[in-house]
Length: 303
Image 1 (tube, rainbow, N blue to C red):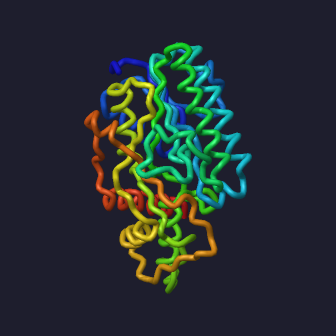
Image 2: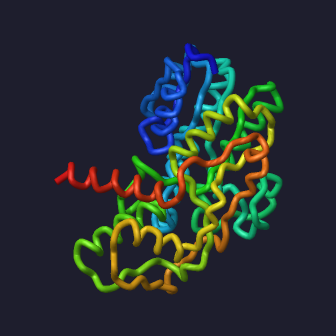
Image 3: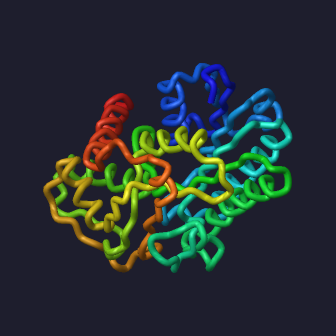
């Protein structure tokens, strides 16, 4: 991307999008813009040369169970019109940030792009998965029909500064961090985690993900979906222990096996991006610490 090229980041006010904005500006890009999701896509993209779509809103298991229609509409009816508008505006290249929920629940591990559509998604986030799969398919359809340079990227579960810490909608890292912080402050002797603790996940720090997305905008131009992950391969139990260490909670962690686990394993195959030469910059412990420090600053500021 030329330093003076006009770049738009959809979802630039959210965790991943704001990290992309920071990464672009740090790399010397001078015309980086972002706005609200409710703006008219055609007007929003007039004159835009490069587009990042990181506007989808992911939720934890509980929110996916309780509000599947709202979550599907929120993702499907913003992202697909934006992809269409990108085609009509003649955007030179688009990077769409999908979700690991696009992979089937019982996908062979590590999950490779060839496995997409090979089976049904995890039932607890079926609606969200369908919305992300629709946008993924639309990007590929425009490439096949018109030759549009629309690249789809599937990241591991992102977390970081600017994360959603709302207990009703937060994902696993933010949810654990907030609840463990509250348990520490209250001196609670025990802390309960949903499920068995056995499911395994890969996580990616938002700033590392943004670095990868900016890298892929220039380094990759193929039709194949590209996974971005950090090979952390943590069980939920190990993640809870890592967050506990950062927060400073000293009580006992217990697992509530009456609650659902979600998909048993979600580890991404990262051979493509590794072959291109990208690797993460931030160790997991440092990423968790930076996230917690940001959360505590927001908590203090809101008092």
